[in-house]
Amino acid sequence: MKINSLISATFLLLISLACSRSDQEPDLFVDENVRQNLLNDLKPEPEVFYLAGNLNIPSPIFTSEGIRIQFPFGGIRNAGGSVYPEGCEVKVVSMLRMKNMILNNQPTVGPDGLFESGGQVSIKAIKRGSNVPIPFNPQFGLVDVAMPIKNVSLARFPNFPVWVGSQGVDSSNSWSQVRRDSILIGTSSVENSIVKSFPENDGLYNSFSINNFGTFNLDYYYYLDLPKTNVYIKVPELVTLNNSVCYLAFPAINSVASLRTFDPVKNQFTLGLYEIPIGLKAKVVFISKHKGKYYSAIESITVTKDLTIPLILKETTLDAFKASLGEL
Image 1 (cartoon, rainbow, N blue to C red):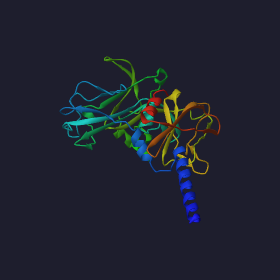
Image 2 (image 1 turned 180 degrees about the vertical axis):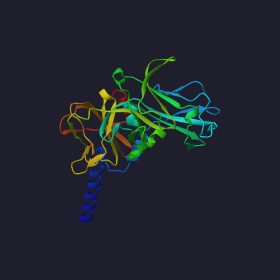
Image 3 (image 1 turned 90 degrees about the horizontal axis):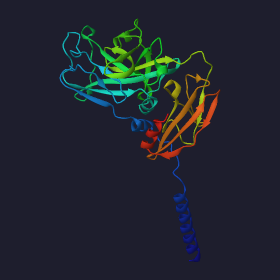
Image 4 (image 1 turned 180 degrees about the horizontal axis):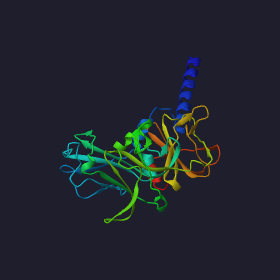
């Protein structure tokens, strides 16, 4: 009887100690496969412009970042010259600055490395809830897109090449430069933007014309001849590519690189197939999701050869993290 009582008391003591430790320990990171959920959490809603009639609008529309979109006066017309479509809405995602590039998971990197960016924009025509491709007939006018130049140094000559996006990993875009001798001429009517001003607004714009909706980027490669290196972002155990996103933001060139390669042995993120120039100032932008909570870090760095940055993640909220991106 005494033995049974002793066993019962010992069992209750162990349960009590276990509960006490559980109450005191912080939430542990877990390797949940929630990366796509995290990307969806970060992504803002596009701006929607409800266009009456047949897009027959003489005035341009402006996004919240000031991107100017001008439709042909007589409406967009198909190959036969008929106005098309009748009644639709245009959804626009403007990504002039690094904050919106990160929130929309749209890095500015081409096949040969890092860009200096004049901004991105995605334009889609929606009718009855579905994406509607709109073929432009250039005989009746094109759509003009103009991105405000926020930084005078970005008003470069020759003007920015136009790049066209095609959806790739994580719904981000891979970029192809528009060339007159390629089929990409079916999406943009020019190879390079031109610097323009408009009477209704102060300031300069990088302007180009398109004959189909899609995603467009104005970019130069950033000094291909500079010495380059990889960068390694070391994270806590069980923080992985499955539950996190990691970027390098470069304020001087308005550019964002995504670190999509993860080494589970060393617990670190790397750039993967390309390297970045040594000497650039950058910010590591990192956010992870665990058990419905968010953990983030933003660290200022200068790129040096084989740089390794250990991150300490702190619990945050989505609103606080998004607000911090405005300070990049």
